View 1 (cartoon, rainbow, N blue to C red):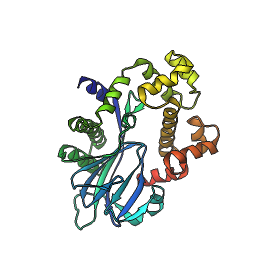
View 2: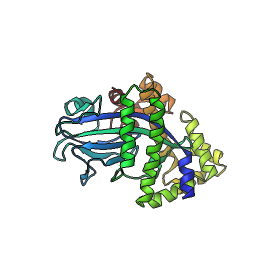
View 3: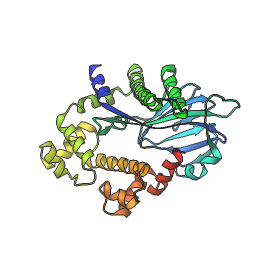
View 4: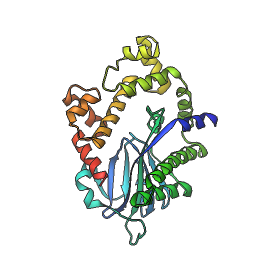
Amino acid sequence: MEEYNKIIESINVRFLRSRATKVIQPLTVLNYYDVSNTLILLLKGEIYFGEDKTKLNEGDLLFVPGGKPTAICFGSKFSAQLSNEDLLTQRDKHLVTLKSLDKMDGHETIFCFISFETKVFDSVNFFASLDIPCFAITDYPVLAGVVRETVDEDLSNNAGKNRVIGLNTDRSVIEIVRYILTKNLFVEKLATNSTYFKDPRLLDIFAYIKNHLGGDLSNKMLANVANVSEDYVGQYFKMLTGINPQDYIEYQRMEMAVDLLRTTKKSIREIGIDVGYKDTAYFCRRFKMMFGIPAGKMRRRESLMNV
């Protein structure tokens, strides 16, 4: 347990957004996806997820790790099917944002969510590194209460609300990890994480990649950072993390690109250069291949999510 405590202590959590939503016309998002982690609380109605359309009970939560596309049915499993990209133009036909959770009359499905980043040593996306699927968190009123309070705070004008939201987001991450441990979920993946987060050379590589996403991140450069041979560095990295370094680097670059789309007005070309792609067309192709949506539409999606 001490190893898990060390990992939790090393996680930097950043709240991104929350929303309370009512489903006015049921829909199925075939490839619901976000770079950040999403924690959905079903307040009333129906939500189903995954290929087998597992039902979520009222008061339970659905955790969708960043970078893990999944099918989610909001309101009914027999509903209109949309891609993540289609949702950009058809959202208003299916979903409406609520300004308060005080009144939940009627028979529509109502849910709320919080979205957040989790970085170990401010470099590695913790839940993405576990390579775990989305999963239901059931019969856990403590976490449900924290999420509900976070959304209520975000909707309010209370003094100190940002501080409360930050504390609650930290608490949410801790409760998710506690649930995983209590239910004995993903044990092997957690064990692997606790091993490689202790390797100083690997941590040096993570830190170097984070600080040089726009520069040279060849295996030769990574080998110099870790003080191992160029022929060995790829094998070494994959042995400890389960992925090869260039795949990890591309994910980190694309994750930063999404953050720049979300937080700046830089052009797509400028963002591509900032994250290491001199060829804008190639950057756009790789971006769409990874996220299933063009970079420009991702920017529009992020602006809609913050409305």
